[in-house]
Length: 329
Image 1 (tube, rainbow, N blue to C red):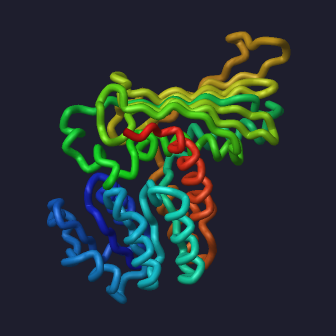
Image 2 (cartoon, rainbow, N blue to C red; image 1 turned 90 degrees about the vertical axis):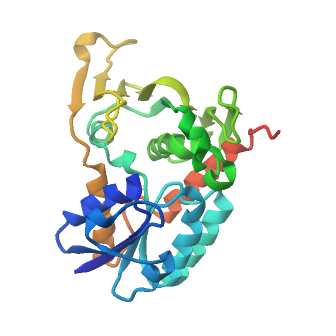
Image 3 (cartoon, one colour; image 1 turned 180 degrees about the horizontal axis):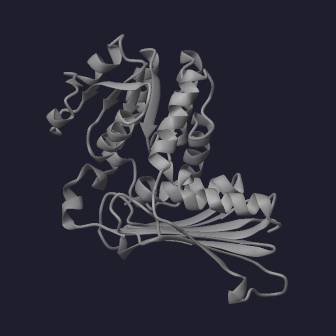
């Protein structure tokens, strides 16, 4: 029996708890949250995060806390001999992530990060089509991820860089960056505009970035925004002999539209509608896939197949490059 504890029982902590409670051979033994009402979970409530991490009956810890706590709690949990699953963002920057990598190496425990978008059915299908059919090399990609926020956001910790680390890029756009990296491998040239034109916050509300892999010539563009009054998720991949266009995303909020993938192979200079295939994805199993992989990595005494510290480091290096274009006031 794998015994697990959760630090932070907000939206993400509760989501992870629901998955863990349905997983065979896993027992959720304790949780800690200084603010949220968690009595309904009927689970032992630790009095501090440290108490939970020092509990010898717990094998693994899920860290589902505000951004500014992620790095320090990850390090403490690893040093306490726990396997760790941490929500995004892993840290505020690449140098902080390098510290975590060093601690992980010494601790010799499984460390995994929550970037569930890679595990959506539509993303799996995109990869399957690219692997099984002759689409050729990727030419370019375009990712757009946008949402609106209300005035309550202004009083939230997410609106302050000291606690959030950044704005919409590190909050939501980081998922799209992770997807672009998953398909491109890496980007070594970056140009970006980082602005807080509308909300006038301590953090950015819009990021426009152009990313290039100079070895392959592949170029990707990203627009991450919190001034998109109609929630949007769109990922387009155009290849030498076809295209894959994903619109919508199945999420707990159900505000991003139906998750639909359009794919087409081309034989001439352009595709025709008759060549298109359409795929719909009505369920989201990404949360279960992530937790299952974390558990299997622990049981198999191996590194996770995705969401690793090296994945996180590469991602934070890219975030750093984009934030170099942030204009300080």
